[in-house]
Image (cartoon, rainbow, N blue to C red; front, side):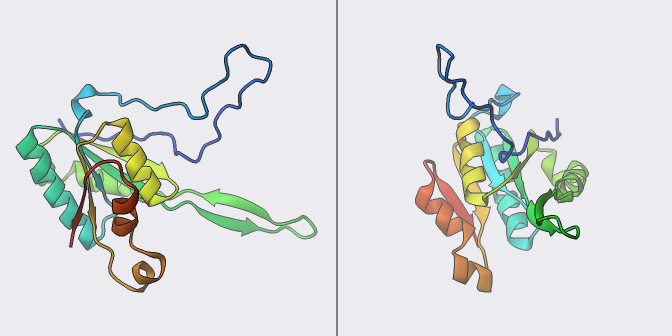
Length: 175
């Protein structure tokens, strides 16, 4: 059965520990997958680009062969926008990216995803951190990403390269 679910963005404020409490609050509350069918699945970064479509195709085959679920992750662009109203100091507003909803609808209609159980997870923040975090939450067997081409990847480093250096699980880069 195909479907998608949207998690709270990772950049939301977390509760602060009460200094008078007997037990201190953990620095970061763990997230748990809603469905055990996706534990030890395959995480794939997807943004609709050609390289991410190739990564998705590879991840579908990998999940199908291993009999596991597919966790499709879209890290939304949450760009800070400055709003300035006269004499007030500028305020930074977080602009949500509605592309995840569009990608979810496209994926829901895709015939090639009928072979594996899948979910779509939306996150906001650093792409490398969020892919690794989702991999940790679902105890993923691997993370599949497409390679980055172009000037931005050369200047700032590709997502695949940064992820391969920091990940605690196998990273598969699809050209």
